[in-house]
Amino acid sequence: MLDIRYIRANKDLVIRGLEKKQFSNASQVIEKILIIDQQRKSTQLSLDQSAGQLNQHTQKIGQLIQQGKTEEATIAKAQTATLKLSVKTLTQQLQTHEEALKDALYALPNLPSAKVPEGKNAADNIVVHQSGGVTTQDTALLPHWELAQRYNLVDFALGNKVMGAGFPVYKGLGARLQRALINFFLDEALRAGYEEIQPPIVVNEASAYGTGQLPDKEGQMYQLQDTPFYLIPTAEVPLTNLYRGEILPQGALPIKHVAYTPCFRREAGSWGSHVRGLNRLHQFDKVELVQLRRPEASYEALEEMCMYVRQLIEKLELPYRVVQLCGGDLGFTAAFTYDLEVWAAGQQRWLEVSSVSNFEDYQARRMRLRYRDKDRSIHLLHTLNGSAIALPRIVAALLENNQTARGISIPSILQPYMGAHTIS
Image (cartoon, rainbow, N blue to C red; front, side, top):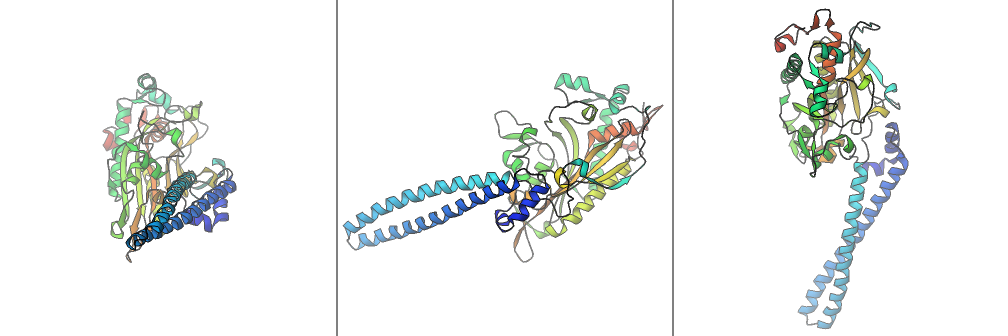
């Protein structure tokens, strides 16, 4: 959430930041918010004045009664009744303005960092690093959905029977590969100093608002019928909300958590190879990293997290690249994001497997997540998260890049987890 005081003091800067994110009608929206804020402040002032007058009249009535001035006390009581009605009306008006302001601020995305490049969409993103050889124009290479069928690894038809499209069934060595990747990613995170957490995979409405999934991504979340509860789209939601409303001692920082969870996302229907097979699912497994940092250390932590994910991909021996997102492609809550993409040789395209983002104090303000400094002053924290890593597209890339005439070669780092060298 953006700070209304910051918006008041930096209106033009806020509008430019929203426009950089391709936010529609930024100027008109901000003007409307400032009008609501002024109405709120004006109502608050009137309420304070009426409440003060009411307090004075109440005290005066007591004095008049003690002095035996019954007639004057009666007149004062009538005036008090009018003031009480005014206070009640103004209180209701203030609540209405406060709710309207809160809803309007919730609907504003985070502002992009000054480091974020201009751009309208993914075509304007910047490749900042690329590693590994990219095989192109090899028509003999199969896409992962054909390999999965050939080696009986993933059954898309069976998943469709049990639930629907986007809910695959992993079988045999396909299920073992999933488990191997999960354990590998968790073990690596523990070695890097993350604490493993097993959070709920259902969250309440306050948690979804806290990290910004609501109201922005309401249509992408699975809501449990007749309840205010949601299946998580990512472990970022429960992990970050563990600290909602808390003031942490400086000595507790940094906080670094890792969690494996299934994730659930309702995706807009579309057709084509870009969403075929494991490329886009409604349920998928992911290992997620979350960090809570002091503001001055958050961008150093972002680079550290990006490098960590890069090393995971390198250990899996996959070609990859790091992409810095432009303003128009940034997520609703993000101030800065790196996407990490792997090359899928069978599809001849890049697949996003991780996003590493700094939200600065946007989520922390929504959930009142703060820390106490050495001088006892209280400040908002910065929150960060990164996929480390989402499994479906990693599996797709592993199958497509490691296919041979004898089967699928398993990267050496995964062989102890798989108990096999090849899928055949």
